[in-house]
Amino acid sequence: MATAADLRRLALALPGTVERPHFDRRAFRVARNYATLAADGLTANLAYTPDEQALKCTVAPEAFAPVPNAFGTRGWTTVTLAALSPDELAAALEMAWRHAVPARRGAGRTRSRSRSPE
Image 1 (cartoon, rainbow, N blue to C red):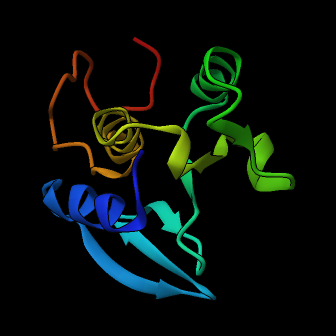
Image 2: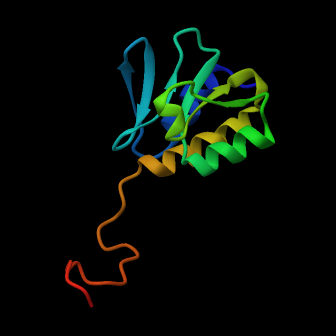
């Protein structure tokens, strides 16, 4: 059973992560937020792609649910911390963290930066 303390410890262990206030929540971010922890410490919202969200919600509906607003349609997902082990939470956080890490310049580029047709 994962806790808010686990989430905070695991998130802050991910490279570049900082913790900041975000309305009534705590946000964990690199270049942008990838996780927010509810004030009661029972749930967190994680930033996934819509496809990742669909997979998580299908495989573990007791742990994952779309955020019930426009953010949810973009992949933001509520996780019930007590429904995950600390190892499962670590994997869930890392998946969200990867979306917040800025791409390295030039990494994986195969085309020129020109906008003209090739």
